Length: 287
Image: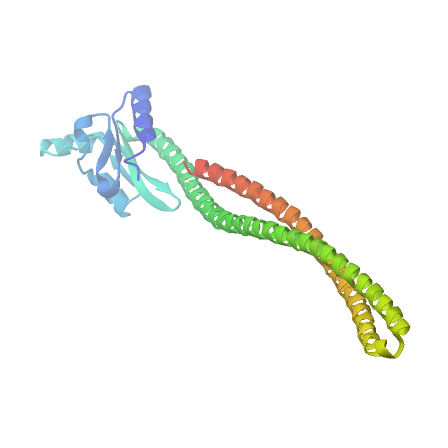
């Protein structure tokens, strides 16, 4: 944990410069990870090893013990070592060479300083990870919503296209009903002329007397056909007017639908653009 923090090296160098004493910082297993005397880095410090294993909290080496150990070939140095504890867990130890009574307060302050920094560092890391996870979830949800919005927008566009097609069909139907009016006018004209023809035929049959009786029957049938044709034309005309009214209402409704779907498509596109912008911001926060 401590090995990758440049601040540990800075603290070590600062203390060494200000006190003129050699300093070591031990990590897992009592391995020296930072030292004023660089050749000591990588060695196992017995005091640090005991501190990290939880056997002791501090290691105190007197000047007398240093002399004794050196006489038997041990690389022992007078000084004071103390644990570095963060959130209830020992993560390292720090030691300063010299008179243990003199350097002890400095070691304790340095240990506390590193612990406070590490606590803050770990909180920041955890917060960064939480933010990353939250941003990742937000980004994922935005992708789902964006996909749904795009699908809705596509559906709105398809409805708009279908509505316009139906509008064209309705307009064509209106034109056809107008053309049917022209046909009905022709039929109505024929019926009027047939009625006139039947009337004239009846008059001529009356003049002919007994010999025109058969012709009179034909004239009557022509007049009936004329009347029936006019009645049929009236009925068909009424039905066509009703159809025209219904088709007109459908056409207006379709036109309104087209406007609404166009507005919906534009609104959905705007929502999608905003979602994509939010997603971009969330991705930037993760960087």
